[in-house]
Length: 210
Image 1 (tube, helix red, strand yellow):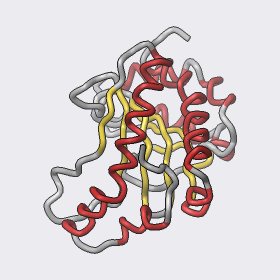
Image 2: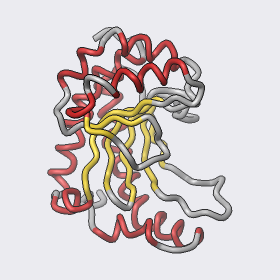
Image 3: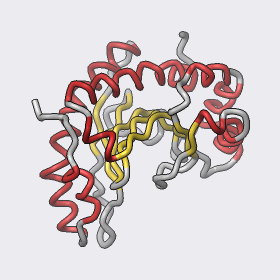
């Protein structure tokens, strides 16, 4: 299995100029780790949800000029894609690593998902204060849940319900410094612990009995 200890070299991929050069670095440096994470966590989600989960490593196939600013592996119970469903992600920007559950604008039933989240806001009280929330999967920015539980949380979920481009992501951001300090085993343990905490929120999104 690929060593899943992160290094500065992984994050520096997103500083490489040019589409071809950056994509080549993504393919050789980061994707082997994403595929290994896919093997581990597709099994984890299949076991913990009772649904067969599939791994989707970002291909960035539509890009012709601008190199990707981030990359990820996503997990969803659909073999042909993940964007129309709530899904889990592990990925990198040059500034941090992220471990999230997300509903993005392609999801056709996101209004119903938002209603279920609004009816179960107490679930977020169980999350640690270092968890973050975001309303845009294409931005590296996120807000600490500990600082925004009372205001921004409900606003983002309402936007998910009411705005066509509304999105909602919750999980952990891990700085480069923190990520490279973790051993492979420590990273896997942190990732599983994060997903353990996010599964109740996912279950509400998909209306699965807890």
